[in-house]
Length: 366
Ligand SMILES: [Ca+2]
Ligand SMILES: [Ca+2]
Ligand SMILES: [Ca+2]
Ligand SMILES: [Ca+2]
Image 1 (tube, rainbow, N blue to C red):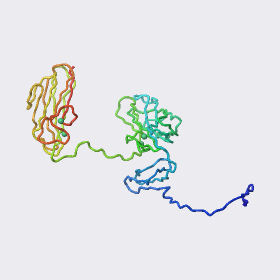
Image 2: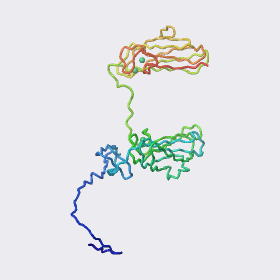
Image 3: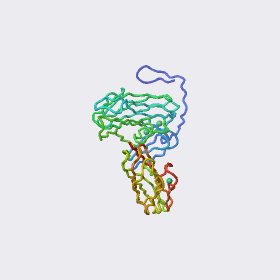
Image 4: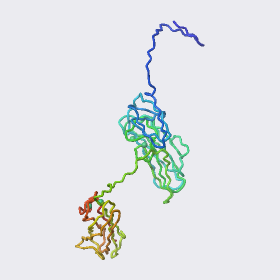
């Protein structure tokens, strides 16, 4: 039997059984992790199997990118939170307003998943020359408004009404994003920046005070690194010449009887010189040919062969027509033959298959 020996009422403990303790050895490293990036470059951290959270309750799994000279403390997630798919949209009641006119903004957070989403937070930063007037009861400071969504049922949404006032003329591009999401989201990452096209960020545009060249954009201070833009062009092939065709017309809206010239430009972006490049041009009804030096004409079809086009140069051919009939007319041109192969187009295979060796241009005769 035990008697307590402290201040206050005396407590007796009866029927106490004692037994030797069994120590369980835990490695703290299995429960808490500190990552630090001491380099000048972004560093990708690969996590051990399992789910983790930082002190802001942000979920982590698999891997994440740590910016230069930043650190993060991660705690192993022992209570599993089901995944949800949150998205955010921002829009305004009007797109064109006057200076100092109040604008109602709608910020909506939606759960597109089939399980309940746990707590999430969003941040809406205003560009310069714009002020928050009313923040739906949410806190705002220094043009930054933050809000909390405690839970969201599957396929449900919640909307925050916010009033802003632009104070200068210009185009305002305003952005908001989710900055915290407790539930793991498979197609977006909170606080990743507003410029990566994910569904948890949104942009609304306002034109204020008529047309001006001023553009005001919301700050985007923590944009995650985006991959470099890759070209849609094939790599230069030393055994082929990548030819492409462009059509230019002097004027698109014409009066009856007016003269207009067309120019066909052929560019060779490598890697061989192209010889024997023949262009075919089909004139629309409604025009008559006035001058076509070096072209052979048969009915409405015209052809010409360009001089050799060395790699990384352009060649062109022009002609002039008179418009003779009212209406909307389309002129078409394509590369008809070439002495060398082309990596992404075939000569002479038509005008409407989307290849880069064909083009069309329209004119309207009033
Ligand atoms: Ca999402
Ligand atoms: Ca994001
Ligand atoms: Ca081509
Ligand atoms: Ca073609």
